[in-house]
Length: 636
Picture (tube, one colour):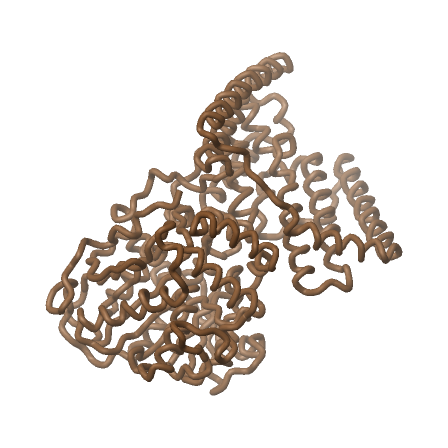
């Protein structure tokens, strides 16, 4: 998913490269100008500072007034937020917390003791003595990388007091007993959202890098930041649509999604792209890739150096990729069955016409993998299972019992509200889905950009992954409602006959197709322990590989980058029920999982044939050049 997500959608636990570079530049400035110099950087005295702030206030007033007048003329309104989706959960938590006053007193005493230790530590530092910090940020927490957070006693105190309070608040709500799992997870998630939002790094007067920039620029960073904020509000038509990258720096088909190929088939829901071969011979059996339709396919073809599509072509595969339509109200009635039949089922028919091959190797990524499992069960029931020779599932959920933090958004109240909104328009706006994924990694995908764009007044850094993450897609109302209710909410897909597609009961246990399962250890969208459950479901041979990093970075990891590692377990012929037991017996291997997959799928090549040119030699002619027109449709 996105990995919208993606985030960065990367799931790597790291901030966006632009934000990371910004933090590093801030740390460099902090080392060049000590925090004790913050008050006189730029030679501004109190009178000059006051004059600058008055000028900023005047400029800001004009900017806001101009923004409001434009919005009023355009009929745009302020964003609406309905907190009742989480209000009941917090009311129940508060009731249970107050019913045990002894535990509450104990929690407050613990916080008071932590603060006393912090006061003592800070006092020793102010007297010139060495003092160990009472609490330190996590190693991957880049909010406090500026040197002043460590070197300046005041900022160090602010940082530690925040970390102590955050730890206390989260541990207090996590310790409340008597809550059901869904309520407890919702409370924990939204408590974390509050804690992240209240970080001192998110405010002008408690962020040393922002203060330094304000002094150096005489407040121009704040004026520029306000302009950026109002621009993003206007761009989002009253909703805040944060720019994560320079959206003008990339163009699909020009500097991303550039692997040569042709669109050879299309219908209402897909364009099918066949890529130009780079080898004289290719595997006889073609390769079909099913990306998720909640994102655009080119996450697998960002640039040549990290393109899985190009790499697969270079390995001698005849590669076909589904490019999903970006639907509008005209496709509101399209169902999950339609996505199955007009998506991969139609693609297999088209591939047979293009190559003459009745079978294919198929790769499904995230939700595309979920659809692949549905396809295999459907074909099995129809007596056509041989159409797919092998199945590769990349970070794919088919059992949604423990589907991670996305389940926070899948309760009856929120689903009903979402469906009402979708039925009004006929689709779910892409930005709404993107915001949900961004909340899963708020510090990296929301607050780092708030600081960079609005407090520092900088333009976001050009980064192809974040451009893809911002290039959102819509969801047809009927399909999306079916998917959320039957899979995420009710977990019916993993139950034999739990769902029907085109009138056919779906039973994953009957899938005998050889399967390669790739999961990623730090996946925040499809947790690897949840994706591992598929090893217990399919009846055919399974190979399970666990990659390091997250939902995007763990998958898009070319061998040449020599990053990350992966785990395989060849010691046992059967899979234990417990994923941690599998990992305990696994072997760690250095580098990308891609060669591991290529070694596996080579057994399903069915020999070699001369390379196939798209639109030539078969019954399908080229419609247009890759990446095609469907992928270029924007969701605004």
